[in-house]
Image (cartoon, rainbow, N blue to C red; front, side, top):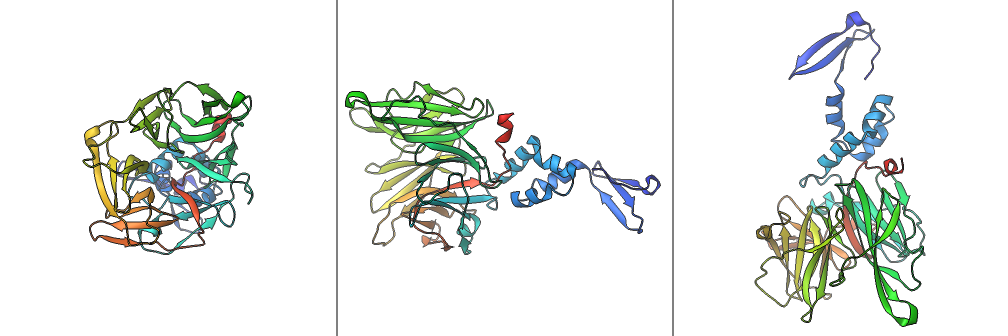
Amino acid sequence: MKTKSNPQSSTSDHQNGKIRRRFQSSAGETIFVFPEEIIAEILSRLPVKSLLRFRCVSKSWRSLISCKHFIESHLKISRKGSNLTPKRVISTILLPFYTLKICSLQPLLCRDLADAVDCDYPMKNPKNSVRVVGCCNGIVCIAINGKHFFMWNPSTRKYKKLPDVDDKMKRGLFITKYGFGFDEANDDYKVVGILSGFCDAGRYETMVKIYSLRSDSWKRIDVFNDGLPFDDSGKFVNGKLHWGRRFGLNSKWDIVSFDLGSETCASVEQPSYGESGFSPSLGVLEGCLCVLCDFPKTSVDVWVLKEYGVRESWTKVATIPYIDDPWKGPYLTPLCIGAKGEVLLVYGSSFMAFDEKESSFRRPKIRNLDTFLEADVYIESLVSLASYDE
């Protein structure tokens, strides 16, 4: 940082190997100017909203906050599991009209009153349906009316519209399943769309396409030949998208992964559940793949793959009984595990927190939140999509 001063009035202090410049102002006050690496260390721990304002402090601060290295450092700190401050819950609202609402995750686990706020997203219109395809590094991928896709950063309000996937596509095919994630090896954000429908002569067909932000285009890929995913939305963990599926004569449930880098599929080894008679579903908890085993009207077991690729690391972190509720569930998307082990998840069209140690339930209080279809967690970040257009 540049500071105007009288050279004869400046001195240097050495503290912990760092040089701190000290200037004497015309008014006789002592002004300390810290090295840029110290300033970057401090700023990297601040929320996005503050950093967006601080870009106006000086040209050097604007350059620092906008540089890729700083953005990655800020994201790394924000992603730490115990840090709830930058985490947000985005909910898809159906009634009285389609919209998205956002609230902070922290008050949902800290027993505070939360406020859901309306957000301005691309192509927002009460008549346009909206679904969250996935969240990654602060970027939320949304689908409008099932065919117009956007990558959108709610924190910076910047977005990119993807080319329509159905341009040169057979009439009658629609995207029925999808996924969004980051290909770290190629520094690329990608969207997978599985299209299916009745085409010529009433024949049912399927097609898989993948979009690359770097090439800004869709291409067809030949995958899932041994069985299509069952879930609508793929869960992104460890550079791969994951879906549950059933295949074979006995309709065995399987977890299939799709590597965004190599664009290949594989099966994920499951835990030794020990029991049968449950309905499985996939989720993500603290960046780890998880399986919800739903024993109808009885309980749900939550299994977490703590070390990806190591079957022995599957751990049952909670067994959540169904409460005495007229609707009787089911439990849906797991959202977070608190510092004390409290599990927050979607319960029908509301949120539920369960503390297994105390065998207690709690419904977080949220103002301005209507009936919602689904909810996802994302992290506030400065990640920009603009650099991919350069």
